[in-house]
Image (tube, rainbow, N blue to C red):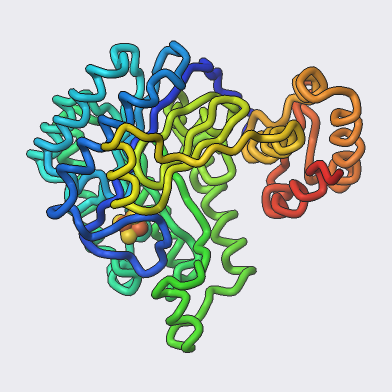
Length: 388
Ligand code: SF4
């Protein structure tokens, strides 16, 4: 893992979930619907109603990041997007936002769309590319082609949005280690500032999961997936992209400030159906039910369920999220916030992993996973959890 340590300003972020897609990708189990034309306008009004109800949860913290995720936020027509952003700006002070990201599908990224979102303040676009192999894109139900990705990036740059992130998936059916290497090469050739790459998981109930159950597609062997991950890490590192989180890589200065707030225990307010919020001690989650969400917030009621986290749940969260990042877990901070007992547990359980070369201690108190440790991150994190 690189020794890059980003400097984070701990402020608040806002996440807005846009749960509309033009079609369903076969691997996806995110909360989304195909009912944009029917429900888009009332959903935007519901988001603004929820923002009015909940902006106090930000406790006056300066909002520095705004993230529109989905679903497919780029499906929202520009007039609705404009209503949403301008309406939010009347409720919450967005003048200090430094990073405003919108997720987009490449086939939505027309010249007109780029100019429109730029005029609304968007300065970062995160694009769901997934693969550069057209047959695989078709198999997993993506609507775009590899050629459309290049055109989209061109349109974004023309409109003055150069801060582009690309999402990729490895372990897709039909992918080989060689074809993945070529996808990584094509991603690099487009010169994005940021790349996120995730291993495919077969989520129960998805179309892809059913295809595998019926024997219509074959899972990529685990060893090949590991090779794909190693290629990703080494090829991106060779190009100067810093590996700052297990699945995330960025050119210097271009880490995702918004997503970093999730990994750094920074409060964020999540608006919209299925959105989550966190204020340092409490998690709030909105229902995965569009009609239920809209009718509640439009009636002036909170739609979220509230879960007070116990001290040990917060410890587990701190350790799990910290180990995913290049910053690692600050053992002194752990001791300060959770006491000697938690600190001793953490240090003791880390020792065998340090001896095995899967963890190391940086600057005397930051515990980080090594490259080999990243491959075993799930089991290492399990060992370090509090199991009272
Ligand atoms: S576009 Fe994104 S959210 Fe929508 S179905 Fe595909 S992967 Fe899921």
